[in-house]
Image (cartoon, rainbow, N blue to C red):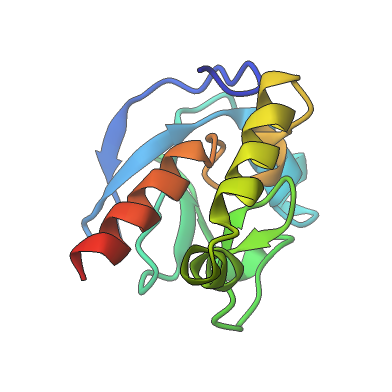
Length: 144
């Protein structure tokens, strides 16, 4: 299932700060995620998102880098979002997995995504759909 018509290319480039592979993101994602004035003077460069939690960078290109503190959704709390479109946290979904309510949450997100009512490219800092993140979290919890 493709999510919300996301047009982000799958290209990787190593983060200049931490060295982890960053995934390409669209200019649209940066326009929605960066605070002003950072979002006003973006060139048409290729931009990448660093998902490494210990890294201070959010986005980078060959010429520019933007720290996570320059994101609209930046927070110092440990409360991580699993789904930015519908405000579902990792903690909430983990609890639902334990309590047997995870399928309802996941079905809701899948139904909204299928109906085209998500906005992953604008709301998720990675610019990508969260549905794979649900599966990754489930797998990680099953292994650990």
